[in-house]
Length: 224
Ligand SMILES: Cc1cc2nc3c(=O)[nH]c(=O)nc-3n(C[C@H](O)[C@H](O)[C@H](O)COP(=O)(O)O)c2cc1C
Image (cartoon, rainbow, N blue to C red; front, side, top):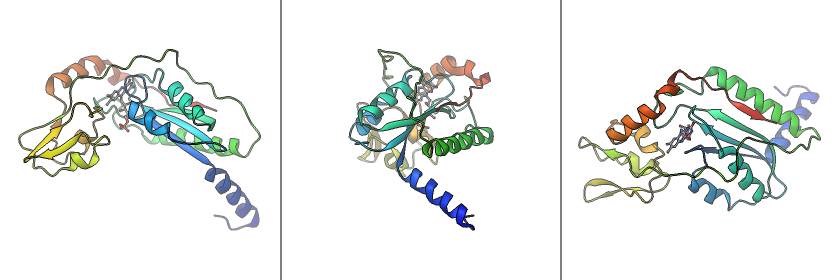
């Protein structure tokens, strides 16, 4: 690929540019960034670094999430050069945005990445403006956690994928700490037996609340 001198130099330039850039991505929960993400990000020092910020949402709306992510990122002293809001299958109701990101999403996201690289090599210094409002939408956590049905084999895959250590195995049973669980659904998505589920009443509530989004096709958004 970098057979000629020209290509080698171009490759080096892109490599150097990419080396100094950080991609900061977060899922959207209730139109916001999960608190666990904001707490982790607050520890970063971005002085002298450029950042591309990305939120991933399940085809409903990202509301104040990208604004919140950009505010935290700037507070950590990164220079934001581009932002994006990408669609992915809804983790609480996988019928929504099923199969996304798909090939078309991958194509437009790759084009976005190419534009980011071009921008890195230019002198452009525009402030990235993204949608969102102050005060941010209030996030109200749902008072429940996923549960393991009695056919659970105790393989503990759920324990190992939980990002907040909310799941433990105690006296031969899987326990979920509701104080720690953020309902991210990593445990249900990764259960090899499909016996880790949302409580059925909540599944039904989600079907009712989100069902109409099945026929909606939102596009990825880019801010450069
Ligand atoms: C608790 C929770 C709240 C969510 N809130 C929203 C939302 O407000 N808007 C939306 O479009 N999608 C929402 N989603 C869907 C996620 O943003 C989407 O599935 C995203 O891909 C999750 O990323 P992950 O798969 O990396 O966890 C929510 C999902 C969960 C689990």
